[in-house]
Length: 162
Length: 82
Image (cartoon, rainbow over the protein chains, first blue to last red):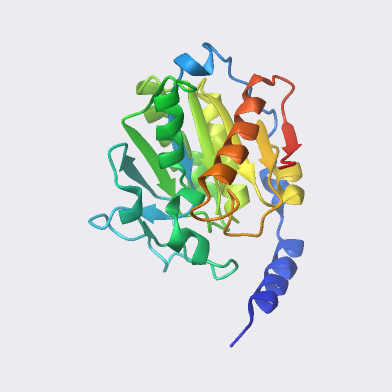
């Protein structure tokens, strides 16, 4: 069985050959900050592949990676989220012990209570980050989530990988 | 690939007029992808906010990321100094 360091080496070699520059963001968008954070509506977006127990799993058979997303209600008990990220390139023990490490909703609830942020949106979003062919993500699913957040009146999105 | 995916989703959201900030664990990838604002946290993959069940550290990382929301000189790639 491969050790974690062996996997990390494999990942490093894969990444060395991967054409990241094909997906360089240009121009880089810059949305206006309309309000102070204490009056802003926040949404979280994670690529840790979290889902609710009753939601369909991400499709691990798609070679390019599953570009779909799951809607996570703001009322969720974070500890019940299932992590279904397919990558073996990282140690999953952290997110298994505490989902907040990659979807810090409990921390943002504390910031909301303290008045540091204005409010949390009624929903958040989860992608499965292991997508080597991101065409459908770029063209379809990421813009769809963006429009949903816009329609919700979200001012700020906080994004975490895993 | 998670780091690339975050950056691509982030850009889509910012294009809809929503201010964004993200955490990255791989500086080299984020330098190429160029999301609007990212905080490089030098933790190992799988631990973007540092340590599980460590709210104090998680809050420090989040606070450092939220500070970047003031920045208009995109792309911004700052480093978490703890």
